[in-house]
Amino acid sequence: MKKTSGFSPEQQLTSLDARLLLSLQRLSDMLKAIQWEQARILGITPLQLQILLFTGHHTAAVNKVAYIAMELQLSRPTVSDAAAALVSKGLLRIEDDLRDRRSYSFLLTDNGLEVLEQAEKYTADLYAIVGKRPLREKMNLYQSVFTIVAGLSNDKGGMQRTCYNCAHYEGNKKRQHGCGLLQKKLASAELQIDCMYHSTLS
Image (cartoon, rainbow, N blue to C red; front, top):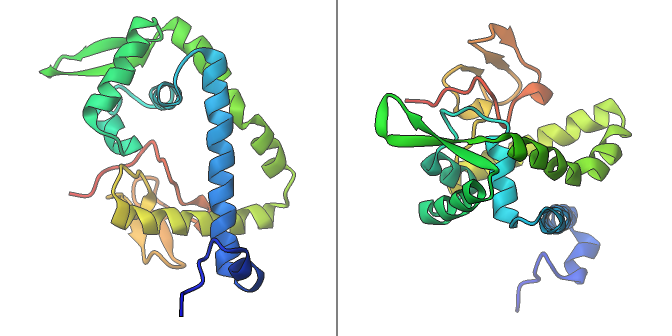
């Protein structure tokens, strides 16, 4: 007997798990479509928009081809070509690494900062929807999403700056969480997905 797919309407009627997974898939598809439309308006590709968003909010230390490729789970040549196109458009500039002549980082130009401000607007509607939800509901939702992201990052790779794979994390990954760097206990809803203080486990 053929196993019922989680994507089938039949399965959706009886399985909460199937409905949750399909909801996450639909949300991902909708955000991707909105992001693509924003990129089209700005005259760049969706990948170039992602690179602008990343480089605009991270330091030179991680704004390197290899790191961005891990972040986006793409090949280095693909990221390198997209970043080079942004340089030619005058939105990114290259900064050499004084400690390693073979290494360099990407930083936004003044024009790049202006485009970044426009690029970020694609999430405005989602921010408005989330902002209206009760605090407890948002905390529970974030805890669930964090658990899913952390679980997938163990198997699917990619560069994840989450608390669970940070050298500063102190806790049992269940109900007890803490940050050794900040010297404070953390509620589950305070666990970070993209932490500026993240330190890779050795």
